[in-house]
Image (cartoon, rainbow over all chains, first blue to last red; front, side, top):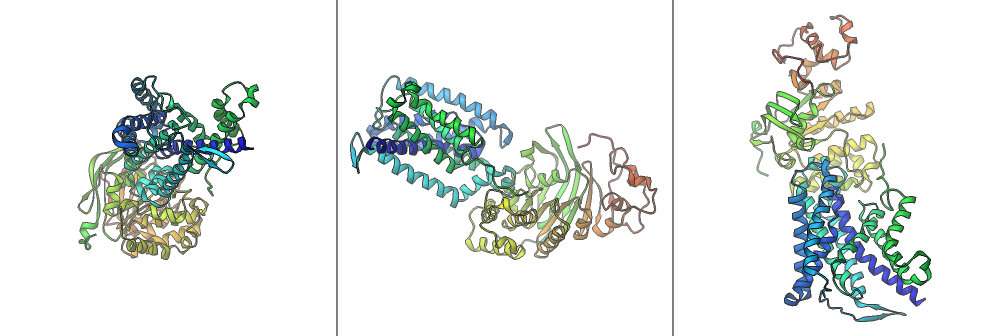
Length: 298
Length: 300
């Protein structure tokens, strides 16, 4: 029973971190119709910057720098590399391919810098643990859940109550009608990329924190697990991304926790599980959990 | 906003406008028209005549369709609008209601209305409340449905919401693209009333319509576009009496002309002269026709 609760808790913590990444995917997709394959390297960039600066600036300062710089890089990537063609809405697929190229460039450079090292991010939780009822959990995971919940609630409030959020949702529904209302499409879109970059940098902290050994050059690949989370949520639905992330997190934790009972599926099935879940969900609901076509009366 | 400028500074002036799509397809050729302050101007024409293109040029959305203004100018008052982005038009007080309503289906009625004010940036809550009250007075039905998703409204309600959304920006000139499209006759009548009311409140309207009967009954002046050029212009009531308009746009059979004409497909570029040679009703003095237009060039 304790193992089960352990696994559930770990799953929630993982899911909370995936949600930060998946929400970034969804925000970018909503704003620009682009699947950002460079999201993993943005995440790695955020983690790397935190690791480099935490000696001089302290953890909080380093994290602030990392979040700001990653947001700026994401925004600049949109503005200068993807969006050079203007507000033409027909080029999203081309831009998606461009993100693959950007990913390779950033990843190659960061891999060269990180090499085979394991970088510590200097987070305040270290390897301390707390007793939570019958289970013992890492403080970093509690922090992951708390911080993600607060940040995601903040992002949802942005969507709902600010004119940026309204502009983003309106232009995701109908670019031309939004333009006619005077929505500044380019600005809204670039801000969306910045926000997604900031979320990725934040997620890096929790992916590198205990019980993970630290930041390594492959940490960015974890973003790939948030990808099925975003897709099975419906790709354009923030609540869907949340549900998808929790589902993926729980699946991964449970599969890893009961690995010995699941050895018939082979070693390391935990890495495959997110994709298996995605395929199963999409078989039943091809548009994703929350991706059902918007209610439209004709 | 400053106190109201003189009327001549609140007129839309389109002069010698040429619009081309994809650098090749000519959609408008030297189109000129004026929408004076506080009037209703109707723009008639068949599908593909360039009516929507003209609205796009004014509202700055040509670029979304890979179109561009290649000659001429568009001004609202003293503000140049050609080549500007849609924000410039909204800020100048020129707001378009797109064809086919295009409400944000997944957003609530309230959010749709809020989105109408996005182009103006931060506004005082009192201004927003005033604009909203005006919309709810015009369309009481929207006030009852503020929390409902816009996609679940009926077609007529969606058209009201689309107009209401545009009114949230407190426009001085409203560009209406086919507001009667796909609506039941009763609802068309209701929309016509609404246009009249909006105009009575001091907002000028440029009305693009295929329903020529409705448009001409509302408008002060009217223009007829044919394959990208203004063919006829004049006071709406006089235009409504000309044979050409009656035959082509009001669906009436005229007694004065050969009936075989009416069964022809109207207004193809090959048979333009039927319009020219038709005997006009006598008092069409104010109607100007495009002189010496050559036909047969690339249709848009």
